[in-house]
Image (cartoon, rainbow, N blue to C red; front, side):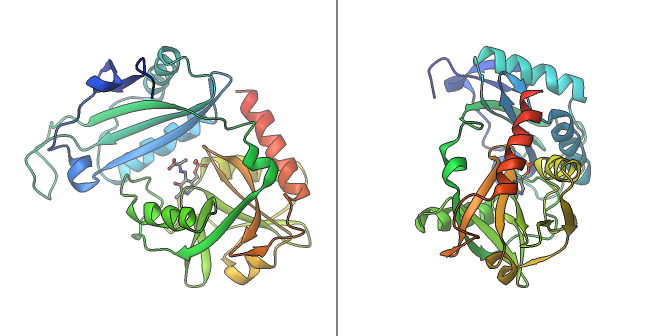
Length: 285
Ligand code: PDD
């Protein structure tokens, strides 16, 4: 958090310390809002059109008018990247239902949405964890029934990630009815001993990961077999390889789940290949 950090707040680029949000913002009171996160690599946005399309869909699902079209968002993102000299990291975008006297139903028509954007510098490509591989735990999925919406209501994910931190590992995979839904902030994948890439099919039970979609495309182009099906926890334990994907981790090898080594306890061969293929795609912009 440098003193020169600039954030975007409701139409203005302002110094971080001056960016204040009213107490009655519905994002603050009700978690009544949507967010998106795009990666930046080499100063360029990664998979951004798909992130902006998901932002538009999430806003539509909860009845908030999208304040910008895709071109408008991208102009703001790139201006923020420029003002913060961001080469590698993340751009965070959030739209809430705006500021109004506290009342559960929607505020009066014409209430302006609250828009906040900021950048975070982060090593996404040369991340040492990707070399070592991540250890993870499984936790119960405590969330609501519309996880396809990228809502800012993230308490269950906060609690899941904190459990991971307390267990000394990097991520928690959430489990419902015995099967993995997704990571606390990532999509879960395994690769079977037969070399099939497996991930959960899209539904309201999980977020449609943008990195997920790109990795499935890359896996198909690399002639890997793909199966979209539920992953019981025992199937994950028995996998030859495992990994998770997100804008903030790209493709992250998993080497241990609940203390059990996956495969030979090293990042898997197909997983490393998929990470390289995704990095190539990301670098190409
Ligand atoms: N999280 N599932 C959940 C619950 C997530 O929060 C995320 C991303 C993903 C991966 O989606 P994508 O590939 O589109 O980033 C899956 C972001 C990075 C976050 O909350 O910071």
